[in-house]
Length: 419
Image (cartoon, rainbow, N blue to C red; front, side):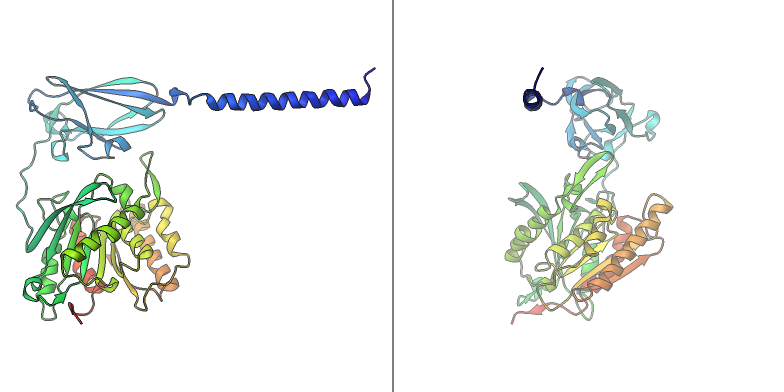
């Protein structure tokens, strides 16, 4: 008969053996690589129409990170032979891909028979596969509109060490800059810079008329001359303008706004201040943006009041990151670095959003943000707010509201002479 002590000893040994086995199994499992079946290789073979230029480059523009996303000249296909191109990518199983074929721009995107518009091509990744595509037609490129840029403009390809890439910067100088050599001038930094001066460079052929607006302010009886610094966006716009990540078309994007803010505040602004006669004070430094750019403006005024005491968030994308901006401004903020308040302009059109529900949400969130700031942060901010009736989410609307926004940001005559 087994005594009680022997029985307990056997139990202990059994438990120890089981535990040791689990440890060994866990260690063994950690050495096993993740199963490759989680991803699948997708191969695209694209046949183009016979009138495609022999030296044409083809791209896939779509909702995946490797496609830009939705950049017409990022994901290039390889030319195999006359009329046949190919590319491949590893995609997560279950991913829904939406895309179109382009020749490097949206003005040369693929079309249907007879030149008709076509829906986005779609593909749900279930296994490795080859997708064969026959492009029926290409969009006929429209001639570039006439340039609408005006005034004293300077173009700079700024080599950013922080971003590791070059960015096109356009500087507009007021008429007083050459006439009044003793004054330093306030500066307005504008995001999505290719859209603010020139129809020829604007993404949708419509510009903000920022140069015309600034010239009108400078020529008034109570002149307000400003230096404008427009910063072109890049294929990383979603990432660089947003402070937190969000999921768009099944892909997690965004969250690098703080790094981009470092570029603007710590690298670009010091260079501008060195090259031009600027008033370097926060009270004379503004930043203006729309949509995701408006979201960036809110982040800039929140995080860097020592640099930006003026900002216009036009049609800000307040839905982003589960309304992250509303959450930020619902909490206590540190006081600004000076006794003077920051001036923040917020606006929204009544026809922004793809549906009536979306339009209503945009208006309500803009009102909520304004109320939060006015009630909880009135010691730090003066807020200007406008609901623009029948205004859509586009450059035409922002061009219309820009004069009012700049008047609010700079309510007193400038420039400030040197002491």
